[in-house]
Length: 520
View 1 (tube, rainbow, N blue to C red):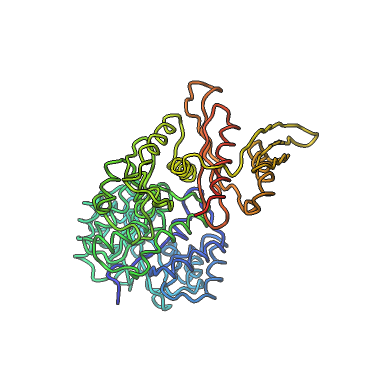
View 2: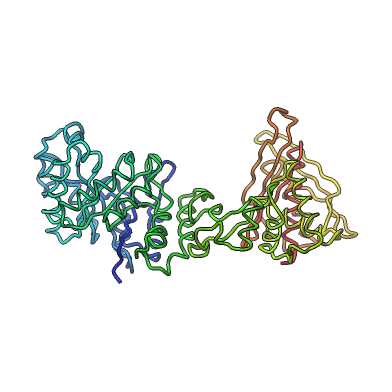
């Protein structure tokens, strides 16, 4: 069935212009394949006239078969004073070999006069010549009207003339762009309606998030009658970014009740979001609507109690419908329901009637008061629950002594850790070197335990964070250490707190190893 709203992804072009993003050709190909599998309708691969990397991308992309998406090359109208057939940038757009070509042109008279430094008539000719030339070469043409809304507010008649020129030359879509990201939803809706009253071709919307309303502006245009929305995965883009497709896609599907990507793709939305972040080498934003780990997180005891009874009381949608999950947080704000739901998530049989529930809650709140934090250290919290339920379980191991030192030779500084660990009646005494004191301590602890627990060979640290809890105490301040560990299949977090950063780190390391040794 033909979608009511087409999704045009420009992560590989507009998104790559965001600060800190640098996709390789291989990265762009991987993302393009993922976007195609997800079911977006257009993938804008880049600007072949701007750099060799994008030329190489299109050369590689031509060898691939896309099942759902149409690949688009991006460029501009011809240069002023240059015949379109003699414009090298336009030639490269055709040579890119994509079925779709998207070009942008000027809407605002301010830009025509001060940026292009040409006459209004020449700008119209540049738009018409380029669109017509591309259509003559069999291309599906998307015309991006740059600064469409600002230009309309400056001179409505000229703005409409530029869009009508693109339409008459054969453009398949005219896309109105809020290039500066400075418009409000009411302005977007009104100008989109005005454009629809003067154009016969389909209309699209391209928004930026400079005012924090990029997604809202796109929705306003869709409500006004646009049927094509451009954006990027995770909102990547220049300045503060573009319209975020991981928000607009579920909004169109669940809230506007319009068809866009295949319904079967929606449960893969978070996976897509995290995949693109991984390729871009970005940490996933936990506060991202719909797909962030905090999007369905509940911390206040009253909220959790309600969610336990009726999830929809504090969730606007089922988390699984976009590939996310409910996350119950444990803190000094927690109530009994928090503990019960979190324990059940961790596979521990706990109910509101469990006698030890009050003791577990009090233990966690006391430790939070001392500086411990369990939102990102669920493994440490699981150990508290287990130890309270089992009363005094025999430890898998104990660290009896440790020493960390640093020495310098002629070339480098070397950290060395010595650690003595007891497993039953056996004492293991190990020495390890590392890039720093924590790395050395981790190596010594692992070496001591692996002899009794070979499965710990597969454990590795993936993240290490330090936070000073009371900065006014200076070097005597208490320190919180959060460690993330993995065995290659699952990942867990542990926490330690002490005035001594090494001691805090060891606490978190010990919890990590102890958690890895737990049964399910």
